[in-house]
Structure formats: C-alpha cells, structure tokens
Image (cartoon, rainbow, N blue to C red; front, side, top):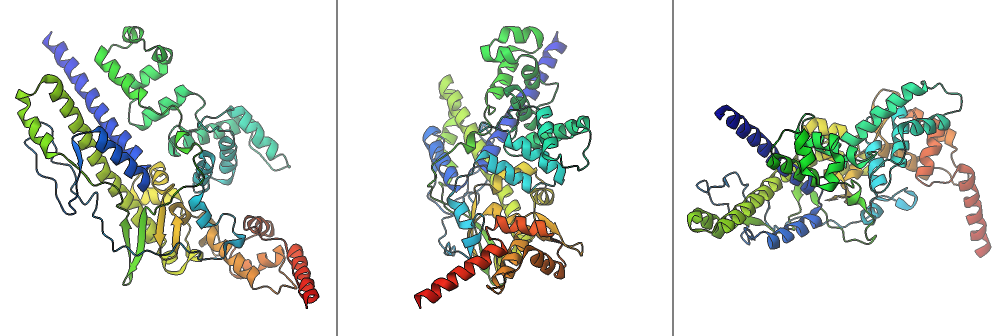
Length: 496
C-alpha cells in the first residue's frame, strides 16, 4: 500500500514540475515576440493585475535577498534586466540612406507597414536553407494557408499544383516521391517556422505540435488526451478520459489546463491591425571610437517584487488560508515574469550581438556591404531554435548610423559568385543599381550587357536573373528607359 502511495506521489511531482517548466517556457515565448511598445503595455497591465509587482523609480536598485521566504526569490535578476533610463543614446535621423525611388520595398516604408502572416512565412522561407525545389513546394503550402494559420488543402493537391507549374518538360520526381517530400517540408514548416503549429491541417494537429514543442512526451497525458480524447475536450468530459487514462483527476485537470493554454489560431498575432502605427526603435547600434556598441530600448516600466508582500508571506501562520494561497500564487507569477524577462534579455542580446558582428560593415559603410545571412546561421551560432531567431527579429526596429531599419532587413539570401564566394542579394541589387545609374541615358544597358558586367566582377547572374532582379527593383527595361530619355529630351527642347 505504501509503495503505491509513493509511486503516485512521484508521478504527481514530475507532472507538476513539467507544468511549471511549461508555464515558464510559454511566458518566455510570449515575451520574446513582444516589441518594446508591446512589452511596455504588458508590464503596465501586470502592475495592475498583480499586487506583488511594483514599479521601481530607482535606477541602480538591486533586489533584496529573500532566500528565507517560502518561495525562492533569490534567483530573480537584478535591475540590469530592466535597465536605467539613460538619455545618452545617439538619436540618428531616420533618413533615407539610398535612392529608394526604384526600390521594391524601401526600408523606411517597411517600418510603417503591417506584416501579414503570409508575409512573415515568406520571409522565413526566403531566409531558410531549403533547396529551390523545396522552396517552390513550401511556397505553395504557404500560399494555401489562411489568416488563422491553417492549411486549406491537402498534400496531394499541393503536389498536383507543383507538377502543373513545372510541366515544361523538366524532369520531375515521381508523384509518390513528391508527396513524401511535400510531407517533410510541411512538417519542417510546422515545427521550425514561427508561429509554431502554423500550416496545420486541423485544430488537433495544431495543438499536438505546440504541445510537443513545449516538451511534452508522446506517451504523456497531454499528448494522449489530444490524440485520443479530443472530442471529450470540447465537452470538458473528465469521466470518460479518466476511464482510459489511468491518472488522477488532478493530473488530468492539469493536462487539460495546459492544452487550454495553447493557441488554437496560430495566425492571431498577425491579424490585420491599423496601417498607421507609431514605431519606436527596439535597439540602438552606434559607434564609440572604433567599436560598435549595442543598447536596448528601456522605455518600459522597471518592475520589482514588493517588499510588503515578501514580508507578509513570512507571517503566513497568521494569514487566512485563502489570502495565503492568493499571495503565493501572485508571488510565483511575479517571479516567473522577472525570470523570463531576464532570459528574454539574455537571448535578445546574444542574437543581436551576433547579427551586429556579422553585419558590422553595413553599419560602417551602408547597405551594399550587407553579407549573406539566413536564420539558420544565427540559430547555430547562438545555440537557439530558428523560430526563436525569427520571433526576435520580426517586427523589431533598430536605429543605426545608416538610419532606422527593420531588424530582419539585415538578413539576405546568398548568391554564389563564379569564384565560389557567396555574396548577398542586397549586394547584387546595389551593384545593379550602380551599373544602371552609370549608363549613358541615350544608350542604356540591356539585361545581357548587365549580366556580362556581373561576370566581369566574377558574379554569376544570368540574363533572366538580371531581368528578374530589375523587376524587383522596379527598373524599366532598356527599351523603356531609352524611350523615356528621348521623351524627356524632346520635352526639354520644346520648353526651350
């Protein structure tokens, strides 16, 4: 009898620890998706909802040691997490640092435009290391995803679309092979892209992917309930679940609580918002001597745990039971917030520092010096998941000596040169703009001419690729440019 009780206690401890871990992870993932303005709103809301949190006006105050409390608060980060309100950050003008009259999407315009879920997925796809074939299939998957984040077609239909789009005589794998490839690509998107679970085919699959991402095992109660008792979840029917899953009511309720905290609509953060929005830089990069320095925007409340409630919990014997429970829950929530804020800052700093290190020449000299960089490069260097890099770099803005830009603009796909050295797509676009700007207006360069000029620079860009990039830059063809020059000249002569 005692053995059975011991086993039951052990099982409950494991589940509770995993639940606490998941709460931390869920909050961390929520916080790293927030930009400065969103974090400010969140902390102001928490200051109202959680009485054990308070705003500190001190700039160099450290958290008091409270290791003798029932709740371990000793690991809460000091105030370096929340920063001081220094006003010595250089304020560069948000100026245009290149001629964007022909730019596909000027960086300054990107700052004020809202990003849709599809835009976000396409950017991640562009910055992935998928092969060209995989990118084509992935693009079809993304194109058939609705605003809630669900795939609206099946794998077979995706493959059929891909085959139809490539029915020009080029060799293709068999349909069966393509179905397998498309299935693997879909799984990669669901697990690796942000938001987790995007492109799921139904709610059950979406919740399962999110639960696995949070660390719940295949043979655990959370996945078991999703897999085998999904209908009972809607009816909140514990009886039938308990008859099959040999766990206590408390354990099942905890598992269902976890499931209810998952996001049923992965595309929710990207629902259309006001097109006009006030942009505040989340990060600053500036020159100090010969070094680039990074500073995070601290324009949000600096919070701490209230000494009053830390002292009050010491007198728990005199507290009513409900009051004691309430204070403990709020203190735990406050501790979780501060711990996750600390982890958020550390992760942001690591990722931002690596990006600045790789793209240091851009900050010194401008856009044409951007190096090839994809999400996987940063993820592997820093030791985080690609989706974490995507979350931290999306909808964030960085103020630099080159102007205020969207952080993800510092990523650029690779283009291989004839010498085997990779250059960035941004570099190629910059070179093309320089070539065209230096041409004789009465005799503009053709796409073939430009291709040969790239070749002389040891950069392999075919004529068709030149035409593609020229269209992206919204530069007219050579014949149109020639006609425009003649028309402008005739108008000028007529005015004379």
